[in-house]
Image (tube, rainbow, N blue to C red; front, side, top):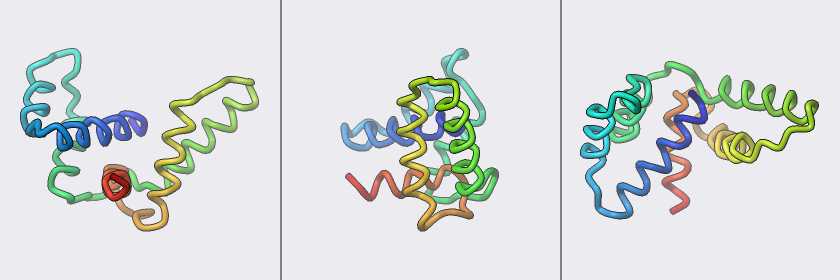
Length: 112
């Protein structure tokens, strides 16, 4: 779910950069049974509204990502998506450690 949130952030940014209404993307997800995930739709709404009620805080997500990374390294696995997600959440920790994981959107958006 943490990586899904990170991918949603980038997808939302693509919508914004190309002029696609984020609500149209959300409706597309709602109408696509394989893609329709209530979790994803909820996170998109939080990002759109810049409102992050805590479901799973950034600090715990970052901890879990680091644990998975340790296991991956121990198993000699290359995990570039995991590494990129860890980087995003580590940056987000500074200002949003106790906010919901969807707050990663604020940090990524600020970079433009």
